[in-house]
Length: 125
Image (tube, rainbow, N blue to C red):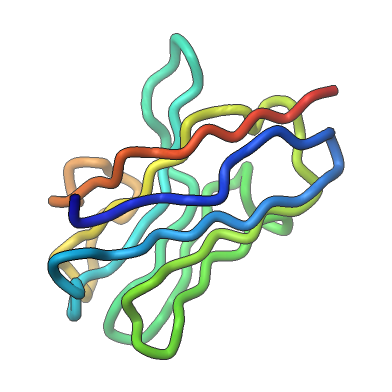
């Protein structure tokens, strides 16, 4: 396992969770990182990304204003702080690593070479 997502769980609507994406076996230095999610019966969708080179952050419209992607000083662990959670945020959340750190299609799963195993987030109404 090279990427592993942690921090999922059951939370009530309006609550918060903080997901972590940790690395093992390699540090992914130079890799941009992203968070995606997949709800039952739906395609995997982009949530947020952070570009390696300059730390620029990108968000899906559904995440703007509620979610924050960040990374630690070593740039190896990436976090997703999720606030004001809604039932429609219920999904398995995956972290991913992309070798691109200039202009890239950060919202496309195909831009990412490495994927973690996912962590389930369930938001109850």
